[in-house]
Image 1 (tube, one colour):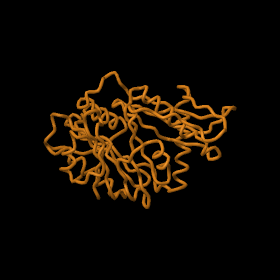
Image 2 (cartoon, one colour; image 1 turned 180 degrees about the horizontal axis):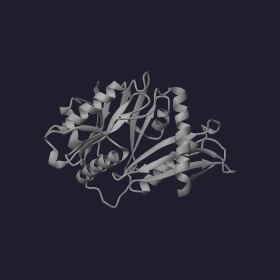
Image 3 (cartoon, rainbow, N blue to C red; image 1 turned 60 degrees about the vertical axis):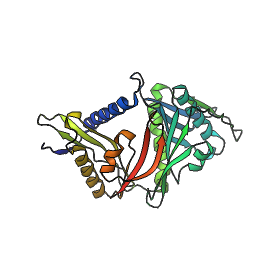
Image 4 (cartoon, one colour; image 1 turned 30 degrees about the vertical axis):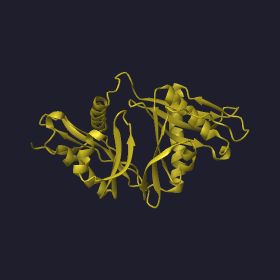
Length: 294
């Protein structure tokens, strides 16, 4: 079959993500009624001033992702970050999540997550250059500890109202980004290098989604080939095209996190090193962390 690999629009990427997610749902036997939900937590003082916050996302795999954790510098070391995290974890558990996943850098908060009971899955060295990134997890189905304030400053933890959540989430992301850039300046904005393959009628039959971040890191987020076109090398061609663009934009190492049902595909494409393993994600399956030097 002759085919052409083309750039993706945002709508194209959304379709490929959806198709890739469906494969996960099929293998993981996910309840179709489950859906991704977002909750934004805030810590405020008696006058309603923002002291800190975090964002919780619960997904279809019953996995929690807690990010954009930020506390105002003047109010750190008073237990606010711990209280925020405990509330988010408790909500995740109430939503049926059995696992919490986080990513953090050596200039962020790994010791904090260690104290909260998170375990290391994999360390990515020299990302950003001269630093390390840590991928960590915690089981939520084994109980969640209570937060014990370490100071006496009065504050309240609450979930942002639906109409305020998006704006607050963006503010928290901005505050965290300011901290990160002060530690390690980004070289450029995010570069989308997602790609698609279309048939003679312009219908998308395959695609790969991902990009290059400002620290020249890159990860394949989704890959999908329509069942009727599998076994013809289209998936491998997409990976090679993606890697070529990533390398041209300064990426030195590719990272993927495949589940067990697609592991051999990545091995055939020279992702030979397993750097970390997380069992029982999704339930009854295994997720692998793999990399490939470019």
